[in-house]
Image (cartoon, rainbow, N blue to C red; front, top):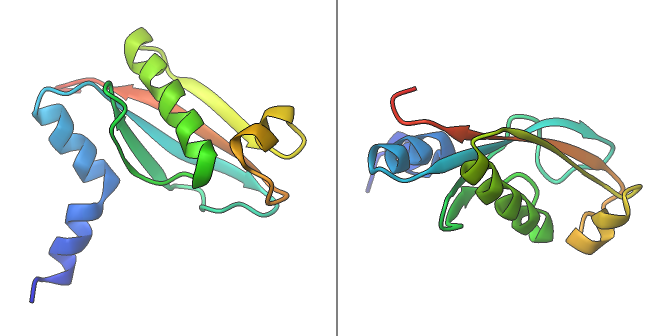
Length: 115
């Protein structure tokens, strides 16, 4: 049986991101920075994304994560961070599936090798 701490490390999105950067991949990290009302993931939750659209972790679930992945690839390409917001008051929230009655704010930033 494997050590549970090792399993946690193997699933930690930030450690995954570090490994991807060390492998020479272009990577962005999306972090839940604010929530209002009902939100599927707490503040501090992470999703890491590479330039090919591979991802690990979670900031919300469902179609919201697909939208975050798309935005993250743009952040990687531009090198500029971006603040995203999803909520039921926003017309796009229904399009991306956040119908839980809450809102989330997600900060997406590129990781630079050696930073």
